[in-house]
Image (cartoon, one colour):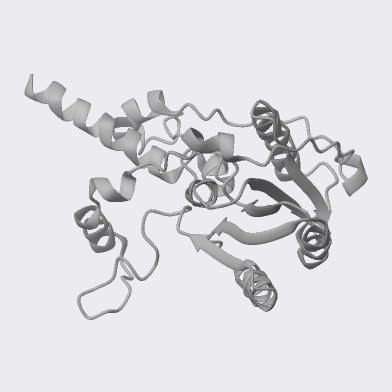
Length: 260
């Protein structure tokens, strides 16, 4: 009888630290196999074989897999249409639970709904969590229940609602010993997916020094004062909660320095 497992499906959350779905998966009753799919439905629409986004994701997954290898496990990295990859995966492993984080794109929502329905037919639970944002669209609204259309009052309400609870980290790295002990030798390359490595320098994830001068220099285009972490937030190599925590710390330090 094959071992029963949980799967944590990585999408826009390419990190082991402070990952909501990974935390809940590792706290489940089964060892966890990490899965990532290079979605053929999306990649087939990219005209440039040296698309920097694909290179960024590919390199990120290689580094992430190296970290996972240190815990005696591997990431199952596949290329194809998600429904076909999932059919193959479910035929290979005895999956009891699937964990992932919310994805808000229309295509992703249709894809996830179809997968959830398919998994339910096999008595496999599909569990999703908020991880990409601090507040979802229905969490910061006007008193009449309608969404804000002007940024400033929205931002004020956003700050008013923010409490330490919303910025608290998920201690997912404390439970990595619950990863499925497995060695996967896969020959997936950029070339096998029809791509080439893009020689492009990507922004650093360390943005603390940029936060120190952001408030003073953000309105001056000639100054290199922005954090450049949009790429990392988009693909989840940085936790949105970590970004908020660092911003709060920087603001508190500035406030304390002004009082001194």
